Image 1 (cartoon, rainbow, N blue to C red):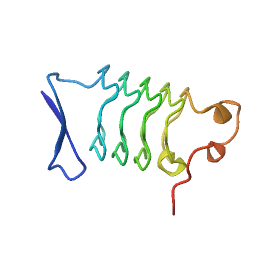
Image 2 (image 1 turned 90 degrees about the vertical axis):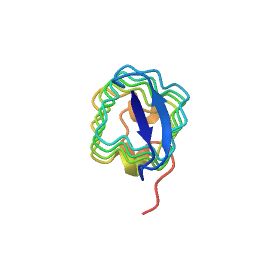
Image 3 (image 1 turned 45 degrees about the horizontal axis):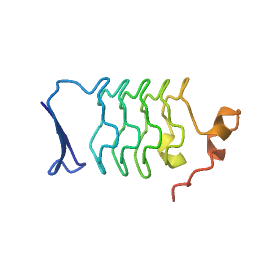
Length: 126
C-alpha cells in the first residue's frame, strides 16, 4: 500500500493498494501540496491532476501524462520530465529550473523552439 502525504507529512491525501506509482492511473487526482520528492512516477497518468504547490523535487516523471495538470507553485527542481506530456498544463516557469525536459511535450510556443522563459504561463514571483 502506498500513501501520499502532504508536504508536512501529517495529512494523507491518497491511499493506493499498490506497491509502485510507475504507470499508475492518477488521472484527476487531488494532490495539493503533495510530498512526492524523489518518487518514481514514470509513465504515470497525472492528466488533470491537482498538483498545486506539490513537492516534486528530483521526481522521475519520465513519459508521464501531465496534460491539463495544475502545477502552479509545484517544485519540479531537478525532476526528470524526459518524454513527459505537459501540454496545456498550468505551471509556473520558476519551478522548471534544473528539470530535465528531453523529449518532453511542452506548451506550443516552446515546441516552436522558443526559450522556456517565453512559455505563455504565469511567471512565479521572486
